[in-house]
Structure formats: C-alpha cells, structure tokens
Amino acid sequence: MSDTTAKAQSARTRCRLNVAAIEASLRELSGHFATINSSLTEPREPLDDRIVDNMLLGYRLVDTLIDDDADLFASDQVGSMLRLNNVVLCGNDPERRREHDKHLEATERRFYDEHDGGIGDILEWYEDHSSESPWKRAAGVFVRILSQPQLFLEGNHRTGALIMSYILLRAGLPPFVLTLDNAVEYFNPSAVVRKTAKKNPTALFKLPKIKARYAEFLEANADRRYLLEPRLPESQLLESPRGRTES
Image (cartoon, rainbow, N blue to C red; front, top):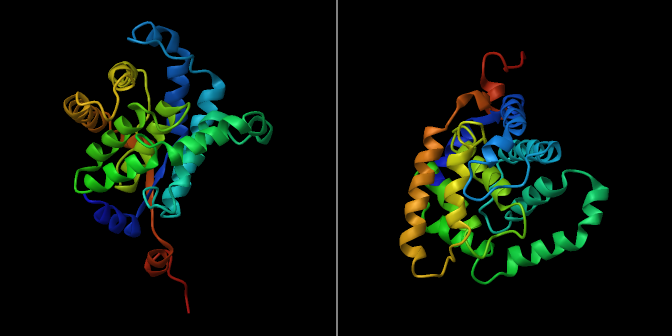
C-alpha cells in the first residue's frame, strides 16, 4: 500500500488503539522480563513501571497523531518523532524533562543534523520505498532508526516501536506491541542491526534481509485486539443514520 493509499484510507476511517489491551500485554511482559532477558543475545535494561508508563503515553500520542491525520514523514511534521522519543524517555513530567534538558537538546541536534543517520536519511528511505507494503515500510524505518548512527541518543527501540505502530495504524493495521511471545524474536535481530553502519558496504546486503525478516515478524504478530472500532471522520459521522442531525 502506497502512502497515498494510506492517506485515502485514513480520510475514510481512523483506527483507534485499545490502550487497555496494550497495557495488559506490557504489564504481563514486565512481570516476566527477567526470564526473557536471560534468553537475549544482548540483555536489555529492566522493563520497569516507569518505562511501561511512558510507552503507554507514547501509544496514546500515536493515537492522537492518527486522529489528527498527522503525517510524520512530511518535512514540516517530523518533529512529532522527537515528541515520541521525549515521551518514552521522560513521560509528561515537566520536572524530569528539565532534568534531562541538555540530553533532549543534544538529541534534537542529532535528529536534524546527523549527516549519515539523521531524519534526512529516514525521509529519503521512506520516499524511495513508498510503494512497499506497510509491513515492509514499518520494518525498514525501524532498521534505519536502529542502525548506526542511530536516530536518537537513547530510546531507539521504544521510539522505533511507536513509529512502526504509527505506520501500521495509519494503514488500518494493528500496532506493534511487545509481548511475552514475541520479545525474543524482536530483540535478538536488533542486536545485529545496532552494530551495522548504514553506509558500510555490508549493510547493502545485511539490512534488507533483516528488514524482510522484521516485516514478516510484524505481519505474523498483528493482533486486532489492540484495536478498537474505527472512528469515522466528522463529515461521515454527520451523514450516517446515527450521526445525522434532525432538521
């Protein structure tokens, strides 16, 4: 599905996230993450309550962006990706944001100015692959975010998961949600991606294969329990029998 098709579908119906179902999965994973971590090629930081809380805020922000018909890959709206990163790191706590002000400023400079791995690289890749399926575009963007140099100073996995979810949701598909069943398959290939430089000649062969693997992974793990009934745009709501106002 092309981005144009995604926009047309978005104009007709906007899928809503079932944040309660997402939270249930993340809380369950959090409770067993020590066991999962022992199975990973490279252990991750604990999935504590703060990280889960911030991820839920991130999913709610994705829901808002979809509802607003925001285009994260338009040059004048890419700042929403930074907002997602800020949320997964600091939540909505103004004090925590003040404490990390210098870090957030450095992240913004990297995001816009990094020559080989900033947002310019993401936009160029996305435009060149606009005719691919949402699964492949989401996987490809995730791989570009994680490979070196990474898009953000910190939180690339978490923010990448939210950006993938945005791409999928905009196409009317379920978001990606980390669960007990898919965590190992999600994290282990990323250990290879994180060590691969985008401009390295080996990346031309390695990254497309990993992207294809992630695309299959995303499609296999699509779960509609993370979606609520689509919401109609206001224009259609007024035309529908239930939404039509009496004269």
